[in-house]
Every structure is written in structure tokens, then in C-alpha cells.
Image: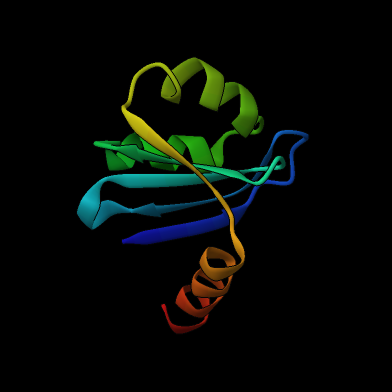
Length: 87
């Protein structure tokens, strides 16, 4: 199962979740991307369903799960668009 959603908060732009890999990828308004590993599907579902995803992120995700940081570059942005198109 994969979930993709625009979040449109002051700090969070969008997020993608891949249940098969338990991977949650969050893109921030700053352009930074954080890829969280080992996120259970239920946590991801609650994050996407939350009326305030930024608060849920702060309270339930950022300090609970390991992540790596990266910034959206021209090549990554193009790759993401292709992935979104063909997923």
C-alpha cells in the first residue's frame, strides 16, 4: 500500500508512505525531505488522517523514528515527478 498526500501546512508540503518498506517521506516547505524508516502503517494512516498533520508529526513521528535528511534538487524533483506519474 502506498499513500500520497499534499499537506499544505506552514511547514509540511507533502508526504508519501510505502507500507512495504515502512518508509514515510515528508517534504517540508523549506525544500528539505526527511525519510523516516520503520514507521508502522497505522502511524502513517493516523498522520495522514490527522486534522493537524504538523502537530501529529511533532508529537508522534520526529522523535520516535530514525530518519535521513536531504534537499530537493533538480534531479530528485524530476525523479519524484516521474515516480508519481508512473506509480
